[in-house]
Amino acid sequence: MAPAGAVIKRPSGMQIHISSNDGVPIYLQIVNQVKYLVASGRLAEGEEMPPIRALAEQLLINPNTVARAYLELERAGLVAKRQGAGTYIAAAESVLPRREKLKVLAKRLDPLLAEAAQLDLPLEEVIELLRERHEAMHGAAAK
Image 1 (tube, rainbow, N blue to C red):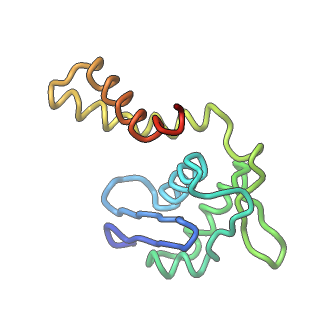
Image 2: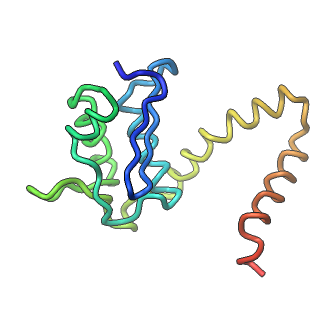
C-alpha cells in the first residue's frame, strides 16, 4: 500500500500522486493521472514513461500494480511498448479522443462545482471566474 501523498517527479514534468485514502484503486489513479497529463500536454508524444520497477519503487507500490496501469494505458492507446526500449506516449492522433478529454476534465470540475455550491456561489459567477482565469492565462497570446 502506498503512503498517502506519495509523489513521483520526472524531468519530463510527469508527476503522479497516489493516495491510499480516496477509495480509487492505485492502478486506476495512475491511469487517470497519465490520461490527464497527456490531455493537458504535460506528457508529449514519444516521451518515455518511467520503467515499471522504477515507478513502483518511487511510489512504494507493487510493480504488478504499475504493470496493470501500463497495460490499461496500452489498451486505451495512450502508450506503446517498444520491445526492449521501454514504454512511450503514443502518437498524438491516437492518444486521447475528445470524449475522453471531456471525461477527464469533468472529473476535475465536479469537486469545483461542489465547492462552489458549499460556498453558495451561483454557477454564473463560477463561469465568469473561469473566463477571467482563462483570459489571465491565455489573454496575451489571444490578442
